[in-house]
Length: 327
Ligand code: ADP
Picture (tube, rainbow, N blue to C red):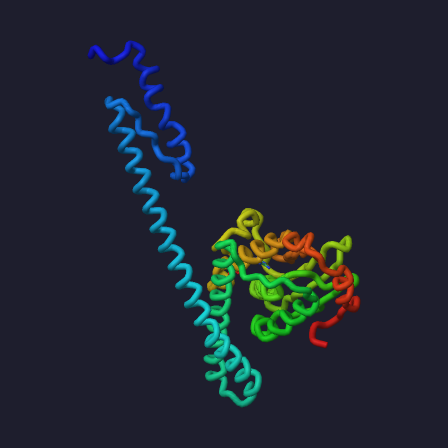
């Protein structure tokens, strides 16, 4: 044994390596912010300390580089998505007009082809919207513009926009029922529209031929408005229910019925609703009915404490028991 090595070698090594323990503990959870204090003594451990410090510096550089690349990619993705959405929306409206106005005049095969293109344009718009929304929420900086919004108005608009799609799927859009007076709520109208639209589109897509969709709105405890989107569709298998709000998740039956889909819709709806202090959940009886509930705060958490007139909230009260969305 060499002379300068102490007898209690274990304790000696422990003491020598002790300073590295917190460094490794932090690194194991992705924190590379701390530097390794290089010991003064030039012994056999010196090389190890220097090596770990070099490694940490390299990792830090790579993290910075990766985050720049990732930010650039996200910027690019968002720009491309924005640019694509405008012409696609124009295509969608033109096809919709064509199909509605020339319904009787168009030969059957042409009509089928136009319907096919129309369906593809809808899918692309849905994908682009999901991508844009999710990217914004993931960056923690959704461009929200909160204002007083009438949830009933938005629900009606979503139903109106879904008429053609529902017709195509042989699904009836039934009633929008207000169980009591529905107040205006403070929220972002664009995202709320997107959220309800996602739920209604799912209720149509995962329905059965001849099935129906209806929506109930209720004002609860003066603090919340709950929307229930009810369909008579395929439902969600028990073993898949836990994963339903996970990014990219698509149910097995759902994917068979509707091969095109992103699995991003519910992930976005949950991100939006929860960001305002609201909730989303569902109840389901397989092959019978599915109910998705959206609970929205009249004054979202984000805005609690902001001074504004409570009267405003009461103002937008709607009539009770709205029967059809189309009148
Ligand atoms: P996508 O519709 O593109 O698959 P979503 O995130 O909107 O993505 O939905 C995720 C999954 O949740 C769907 O693939 C489907 O399995 C299930 N799902 C959502 N809504 C319903 C519904 N109303 N009825 C049955 N299953 C549904």
